[in-house]
Amino acid sequence: MKKVLALSLALCLTLSLGACGGSGNNGGGSSNGGGGNDSQQSSDNGGGNNSQQSDNNGGNSGEQKTVGIAMPTQDLERWNRDGAYLDAQFQAAGYKTIVTYSNNLEEQQVNDIQNMLAQGVDLLVIAAIDGNALNTVLNDAGDAGIPVIAYDRLIMNDNTSYYVSFDNYTVGTLQGTFVKDALDLDNAAGPFNIEFTGGDPADNNAPFFFNGAMDTLKPYIDSGKLNVVSGQTEFSVVGTEKWATDTALDRAQNVLASYYADGTQLDAWVCSNDSTALGVTQAVSSDYTGSNTVLITGQDGDVANLRNIKDGLQSMTVYKAVANEAVVTLDLVRAILDGETINESLISSSGWDFDCAYDTTSYETTPGHVCPSFLLVPDVVTADNMEEKLVTPGYYTVDSDGYLVATNG
Ligand code: BGC
Image 1 (tube, rainbow, N blue to C red):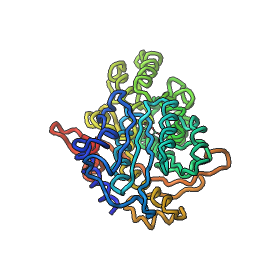
Image 2 (cartoon, rainbow, N blue to C red):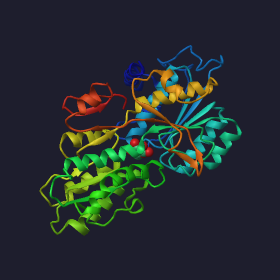
Image 3 (tube, rainbow, N blue to C red):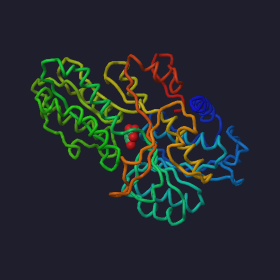
Image 4 (tube, rainbow, N blue to C red):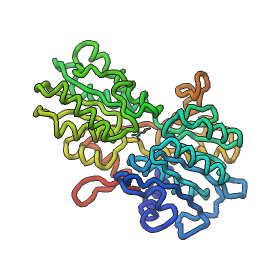
């Protein structure tokens, strides 16, 4: 039933992004990131021609509540989808929304959130640019009694009320397992050569992704079946600031020039997400001289990467259904604002038709201070299953040249 909601929202989004001024600009942008058009927008059910206007007051209090939704940037594709889904869902449920994208600039995000507090939001949903850079504003929210949901990325401040995300470590194990299976590491003679590209060190998720992949592949590195020719196996060395494609591209070109220009075969490159995979794929396409197909992993199902997967340039992506992440966030917000006790019963009472775990051990905002978390389950998408995993559920459609386009972006 919740899936139906997500799907009908996807359709609404397609319509509303094109037709309904107001919220359309918030999550819209373009599917490829929009190129630095980050903006701050307010949306209000009471104004304009928004087709999602509803008489529901966003809770039982009789007064329409406002939810501030702070996204990091429109330059990384997924946040456009998240912002659009969240905005549409909250509005459809009768809440007012304020949606911001902060150009991947920590200070701008602080200002954006401060503005939301000044405008009297009842609750904040924040995907942090830097999980360590929001202390002042989170303390202000705490002092004002405003609940904060860390959305997708944990915020390292104890005023974070709840965390909604995917099982980030599993994202990495799925990538590592994909490589293990594709190279048949348990049976093939090898040895194989591999490299790693991690995410933004300021993003609390990034080490989880990296560790999940590294823990899966380390036994094969230790046994010599896998060889990291560059020797770059530490997250602190392979991380990619801001998850930037160009940064990943530059490092990949350096690694290829330094360690593979002599004809050494490269078999796999584990990239923590699609924006970094895009850079690595570009480097491999232009600078790698070997004739074999290099396995490249990713995460998110960005449109350019799905194209590359279809064309055989990237091997897989880990897809996280952000429509479902938004559903969990909405139901959690509703329960918080209605004054309900939050625990795992939210999962059974909500009747979601997707898996979600209530976790009270994995994520700490400061040492010893656990943040109760709702964690969804990521999935592997390849050229062989992308229509089944992405098109059939309605997240993407197939355009006239056979490539996938996101339904809400
Ligand atoms: C998200 C990933 C995303 C990355 C860059 C992470 O926090 O979990 O899905 O690829 O940020 O946007």
